[in-house]
Image (cartoon, rainbow, N blue to C red):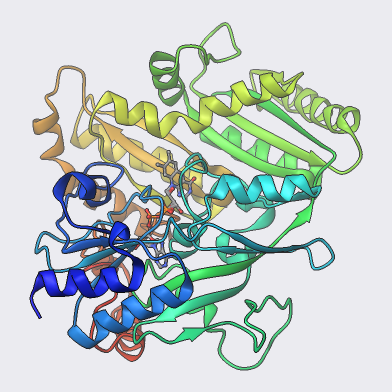
Length: 475
Ligand SMILES: Cc1cc2nc3c(=O)[nH]c(=O)nc-3n(C[C@H](O)[C@H](O)[C@H](O)COP(=O)(O)OP(=O)(O)OC[C@H]3O[C@@H](n4cnc5c(N)ncnc54)[C@H](O)[C@@H]3O)c2cc1C
């Protein structure tokens, strides 16, 4: 069979309108969000059901055709972009966007892989529940992509990563079998099920290299009665760490977000998204954005945050504080955090690191690594922000004033090595929440023990012996 025979066979499964073969139709699927990678594909295939996914996979398995699964294409590691051979298909799951079931007694929701995250959040709100996964890309990323990259976001501190929110998965394996469904066809979603290896955990975080997630049953939580946001100005990440400990002591499980943002990151948002401004009249080196989710009422939550801020001011941990008095003020404060990635992208290229270290060591990590970078490349700018409450930092390096993009990006290899070696010394991870994709596929070999990489290869070979699932990613 030649390429047009394969395209025709795929069209017979999903319908001709859902097999995109010309360059203009394909373009949006072939470049990643950060515009670091552009690939080519034999076709973009858009199945509308699990059975269609399985039939497409069976065709590809029979003919050895590589499959690159794709959701919202917002991933940060190039995981959803094909290589340049033009031999693979991109399988876009976005047509599979139904909510199959929502059960308030089970506190669970079953959704198809292409469901946009914000749609799931809204479905939960409609029945007075909370689906706590929250990312700045929630308007376009899909739950299949969230699960496949085990996305983190701003609620991890209280609710965990996407993995912790998943009760069951429906998956099409690399030979086209469908697993994860009960005898009646519904996706399993038990809170307790110790019947051997937990297969769903293999597919979560696998970045599409082991199979295709087609649906998931997810945990819901009672909706909090009030969410109150505060913004605190402080001098150092060390002070932020002390504030985190104090906030956890005083607020316990009601503390649902604790985000660190450097002043440079805030000023980028102010420049590119002018309506959003720091609430403080003077500049401070860092800010912390905090959120309390309370099951009593807003007055209770506000009083708790006010008490915390007063003590933090008395203890000298913070220099100023603002507590949002309305939803719109709260949204404004959140924009200062959520717009950082986009504002940085608008500035031009930067060298990004999505790292984690033990929470207790994050201030030491920043101080030590900032000093090493300043000594090696005087003048470059650090745009740090991230989920301090999880020990996860987006530790990004931007060009020195007047430096050309090309000259700056030439430093990428040595900058990465310096940062990742430092992460290693602090007992951390070189990919906290964005995955490996094609971006860190080589680098991970330096930092992950060889025995663990070998075990990963054994799992890959067992589940995808032909190597057709998202080749060239992760491993
Ligand atoms: C502004 C912005 C902010 C972000 N903030 C965060 C953040 O705070 N935390 C965080 O973790 N990430 C963040 N991200 C990264 C990204 O949004 C998340 O990783 C998201 O989970 C990706 O979902 P997606 O549907 O876009 O997946 P895609 O980018 O389409 O794919 C991601 C990976 O999953 C695979 N995949 C996709 N769907 C499936 C499927 N159904 N079955 C098998 N494999 C599949 C792809 O092959 C690829 O390897 C951010 C991105 C942007 C642009």
